[in-house]
Amino acid sequence: MRWLGWGWENGACACRACVEAGRVPGHYEGSGFRVSIHEVTTPNYSGQCVVCGVPVVGEHCSFDGKKDMADTALMKVESDAIQQQAREVIARVLWTRPEAQERLQSFEISSDEHQDFAAALLREIKTEWASVEAKRKTITKPANDLKKAADNLFKPTLVALEKAEATLKSKIATYLTSKERANTAALQAAAAATTPEAAQQAIAHVAPVAPPAGVSVRKVWRFEVVDQNLVPRELCSPDAKKIEAAFHGGATAIPGVRFFQEDQVSARRG
Figure 1 (cartoon, rainbow, N blue to C red):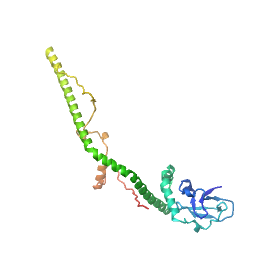
Figure 2 (cartoon, one colour):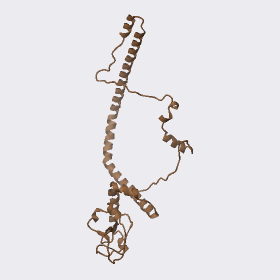
Figure 3 (cartoon, rainbow, N blue to C red):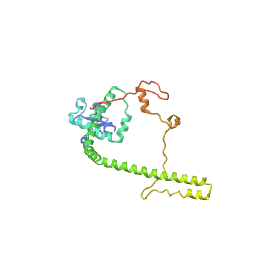
Figure 4 (cartoon, helix red, strand yellow):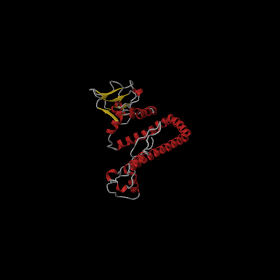
């Protein structure tokens, strides 16, 4: 027995894809029965999925002996409440499931009807995103406001302390560097001395170089670009912002750059 979807005695139905994707509202569970193919002489079944609107059809279909559903007029959704709940299931449940994104990636638009369905779904997604984002902000905004107030309260003191810390570190580093240079000069003078006495006098100026208690010092390498024109090409990166600015400024050709157009789709809320 092969089944095509899910049906209800009121005439509504859902396609197999929506049922398998979890799009069918939960209150329908247990209240319907499968649209099945039987070797019986009942009229052909046709209807419209209450979730996505695609046709649900079958040859020699019956609802497991239930009410004859051949009349397609009965397939209309009977209330806006059911339609709204279906939308909420699509927006709030479907998109959080991994298989939903996989199913969406495999969806191909090959007709105007498919395009209209995709546009409607896109508008609903925009609306739902705005709704979820608004709810998120009702939780995060008070916390963010409190954090901002605390930051503003403590920022002047923290900035002052950080500035004082940087100043003292710089002065200690400068002093240690000056001692190292003095030691180097003393050793050079000792090496150049012409008498042992002169060498001893020079060496006597060598002093231990060590940071004060509670302070540590380590050597780190830094660099600065003194001539950017001499930096090798392989150590440079194209500046995307400058390229974009050049394009908007009228440039139509830049060596090594290809300009092209692509469609950018925007959507309003449903």
